Length: 68
Image 1 (tube, helix red, strand yellow):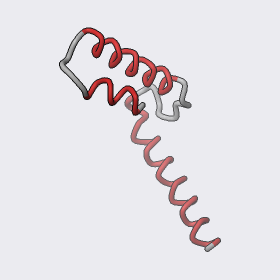
Image 2 (cartoon, one colour):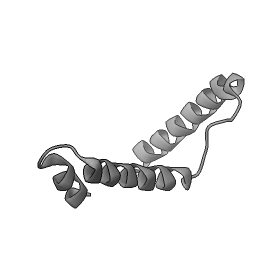
Image 3 (cartoon, one colour):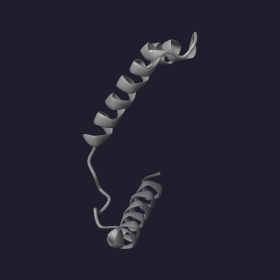
């Protein structure tokens, strides 16, 4: 990543830099696509998911505090 940053940071913008940036972004998108998807596909189900997820996080935090 640092090498990519340095290539993009130095010198004028040109086609090589655009290709480096595009390759970097495509790699990031591919990595993100491989991550598990927890959010619902249906936007109308988002509110229920947020409530359930928040309750789960609260339980995990309470367990953490209890173990301290």
